[in-house]
Each structure stands twice: as C-alpha cells, then as structure tokens.
Image (cartoon, rainbow, N blue to C red; front, side):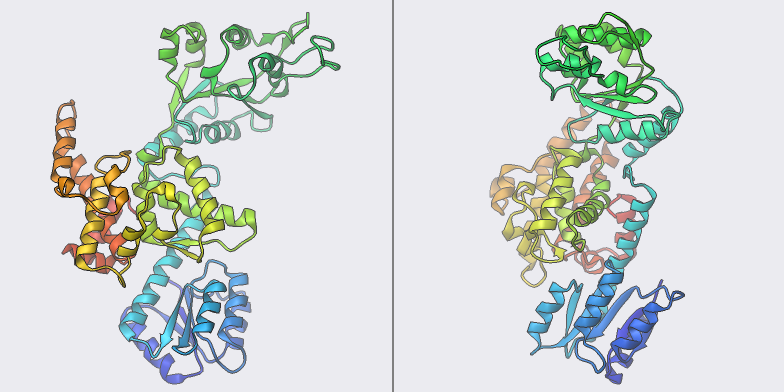
Length: 505
C-alpha cells in the first residue's frame, strides 16, 4: 500500500498522527508545507499517496490551494483537510473543492484514525474500480450469471452462427451484440443496429432492404438498406419479436440464402451478413399466438444467449454504479462523485425494473443533482424508495439502537427474495405491527421454495438472510465494517469473509 501523506507545519500534529497510524500498520510520510508536497508529486518515480491529510493554514501555501492542485492531477485521491472549529467557512470550501472529509482541531485521535482508514478503503475501492473499468470497458460483471455470458461470448465470437439474445429491456442486449461483433472475424466490418419496434411498419421494409428510385412517393433516389450497409459485418435486429408478420417472410429468405430485393427492385441483391437478433418477449408464446413465424423462430434460435436482469446479479451493482458515476462525470466534464456504502446498500436492494439502463440513468441523475461529492442514501432519487427518515436513521449521529432496528427490519422485509419489489408498508418509514415479525415473510418464502424440486433451500435462504442483515448493519453504520460487526455481534474477520463470500463488495 502507498503511504499516507501528512502535511502540517506543527511537528506535534505530525508526530501524533504518524505514531497512531503506524500502530495500525499504515505507512506514513510527512511534510511541513504544501510546496514540498507538490515537489514530491512532480517526481515521476513517486507513486503519490494513498490518502493526503493536510492542514488548512500553513506557511508557503494553504491546504485549499494544495487540494485544488492535487485534485487536478489525482481526481480520485481522498484528501482530508484539518481545520480549527472556528474555521467552518474553510471547511465548506474544502468540501466544494472535493475534499473527502474535514478533521476539526483539536481532534480525537481514534476518530481521526478511523476517518483515515475509511479514506484508505475508499482509495483502494477506487483503484480497483478504475482497474476493472480499464480492463473491461465493454461490459462489467462479476456475478456468476454474467461470467456465463462472457464465456458464451468467447465461444461464439469466432463463428458466424446466428445468435438470439433474450433478456428484459435495459439489460444490455446491444452491448452483447457489439461484443460478439468486436471479437469476431468480422470486427473490421460494419456493425449496423436497427430496432424493429421503433420504426413504423410501412417504413421498416425500406429500412431493412432499401428501395429503388421511384419505388414510392418521396423515393427520389436509390437507397441502400441495413442489410447492404452491414455487408461483410454484423446486423443487429433488436426487438425482433415486434417485426410485422409479412416482413418475417422476407427476413427468412435473406437468412436462408443471403439474397433479397430492394423495394421496387427487380434484381436480387447478395449480402454477406451475420445476423444477431434480440428480444425481451417470449418468442415461443408468440409463435403459439400466430404472430411470429415458427420457421423464422427456428432459423434465429440457432444459439440462444440469455442476459440476466440486474436483480439476478446484485453483486455487480456497486461496480456498475462506480463505473456509471465516472462515465457521467466524464460526459459532463465534472469531478466524479463517490458513493457511500450505505447508499450502495440501498441501491443493491432495489428491484431495478429498468435494469442496467435504469441504474445508468440514476447515476447520471446523481452526478447532476446530488448536493455533495459523497452520495448518501438521502441523495438517491425517489424511485429507489429510500425513505428520508430511514436514511437519516442510518447515520450514526442520529441513529439510536431502536432506529437501527427499524432500518434492519425495513430492509429485510422489503427484499425477502431476489428481485422482490419493496412492500408498500416500507415506504412509510415504519414497519407496522402486522409485519413486525418478518418471520412470516421468511415462512412464505420457505414454503414457496420447498414446493419446488430445489435441494438447496437452506443455503439459499441463509444466503439471503445473511446478505440483507449485513447490508442493514452497513447502512446503520454508514459503511463502517468494524462497527457493523460489533452491532451484529460477530468478529471483524467474520464480516469481511462474509462480505466476500456473499459478493457484497
């Protein structure tokens, strides 16, 4: 780990912090003024600090000026500003400049160490997130369901086989199609996408196959369709289940021999295209309903690839959230915002009916609307269902033991099963007496699972219970694992191991 840099012209402050951090096995490096820090950062061989702790008033440059210059070079570096109680205006300026937190003087040493440790954890999370984003910019996912998708992409990419991608709206079907194209022998060819549900029926035929001049009113020139545009590459037909029935016949012909006719044309056009189709609908049912051709279904359904909804890969939500926050900040030209463990816990229990697209939109909203650099539960949009009274109860300054119990009960009651939407009673901020015993919900879930042919009901319910209990404890302690472990009555190593095993990182 890189050292924690301490910047203060007061030798006693430096000495006390150095000794306290060394006792915690945290390496340190000290400076007496901002100029020396900037010189060290200019050294190409210096990897910089893990966390920077700086006084606000020093000879040779203020801590706020240092904060501005450091953030310009290391935007993700947590900076803690030390300031006197009478210096609250400076504290506000520190937050506006992107400080992680401010430390009022005189400070309580254990609290200062705890704050620095939180900053270290934040810095390490940001490093891991940036590394993952660099390694996998196309698609992100550590959940087993997504790893299966990645393996399938790896197997299917070298071939020209037709692929049918199924999944709910917003789950990222076009990203999968683009990945299949990018890693295929056709990668140098065009990737052409068309949403068949978004184009009016009378225009869709021309969009797909093109038209000759004079084929219909307004056709003043010959136009190449998407099949011709994708020649030598990949054509992605999104929402194929909504394609009009009469056009399905023409599509079947192209898939059979690669030939088609432009609208109004008399000469066959030959194209060499790999077709990848996608739908959120049940095509088998649409075949039974007589609105989708059975022979076309079998032609498309050579290889089927199911993309899981976000509620089935909740362990990916923290990684995706940080990725989208960085992405939104880059698009808007602002500094990326950080998100607390408590806010991540609330996001992780949300059902996300709009899937990854909805999470991306929420992150864009937070980048614009969240008032501070650190996003807390109270900053989340109303659609997530965070009750402000519960969000305040999660903060240690305002939470009593009974408040924390309400938070835990509300979280457990609202997410008794993966993908479950929060029950209406949770939105009021209190769990009524009729639902005070969450064992009723557990009993119902157990009965439902036991009625199936599953043989892992114990493991499944235990995993759900432990996950929600740990998330509730983290929400009540604003992400502080040691304090959460103490409240739960388990050891620090136990909660760390459980977080890893349950995919709650």
